[in-house]
Amino acid sequence: MHIARTLPELRAALATAAHPAFVPSMGNLHAGHLALVRQAKPLGDATVVSIFVNRLQFLPHEDFDSYPRTWEADCVQLEAAGCDVVFAPRESDLYPEPQTFKLQPDPLLADILEGQFRPGFFTGVCTVVMKLFCAVFAGKSAGTAVFGQKDYQQLMVLRRMAQQFALPIDIVAGPTQRADDGLALSSRNGYLSEAERAEAVQLSLALRQLGEAALAHELPKHLPALEQSALKALTARGWQPDYLTVRRRSDLQTPNAGDALVVLGAARLGNTRLIDNLEI
Ligand code: PAF
Image (cartoon, rainbow, N blue to C red):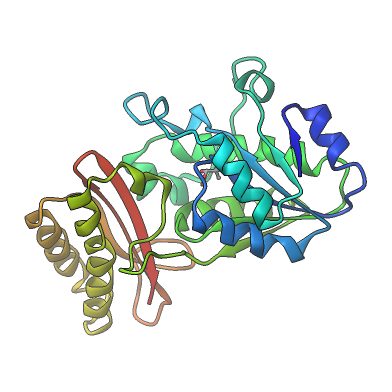
């Protein structure tokens, strides 16, 4: 497994690859990331994983400084999963000067849900992913990038970015990996205390219940009341939910009868903010 710290090192490591398969990450890898790497492997002739904690996508009060950095363990796991190249740029290599040019995603998709509660988040994500794509796919006529479906809105935003810029990159979704009790795997689960960890599955249960209720009622008429009661129930358990909502899959707007649906939620448990979603 090659470790590339700089763009020239990455280009050298990928010199003979015609169609890289790429999994961008912020490190602190868990079984969810490793499933993406295994999924990526047959989709290209070199499997590349980036590890870069991207300052641009964190708000000032968020966990950029404390975000877990577990470089050695990440490399051991990536090697075992069959990764060919790890791209782990220093901040000064990826952002050699302040990034004054940024990619502004469609506000209709990016300023709702996560974007409403984390303003600027998707601008930071799109900007770094475009930079990473330029790094990994420069000079290649085709490529594949795999993103986890746990970050449902992120996946949609990045798909639209690839489509609107006509990038020769297939965007592939990796199914959410869950712990035995149903909690979606996430690096931020590591912040949970033992008691919080036992409680954490309630977010996915709340989404399932909301989804079942939505399927049993006329939409969109009853949706506000159903969402309010889901928010209230999770709040009563000690959570601080940002949103629990049913949207249509195609554009994450309020659904009409007959639309394919997804339930999305974000909520804070203690100091940890968790997100999850469920297609219904
Ligand atoms: O999902 C993530 O880990 C990050 O948002 C990504 C896509 C690697 C960009 O920093």
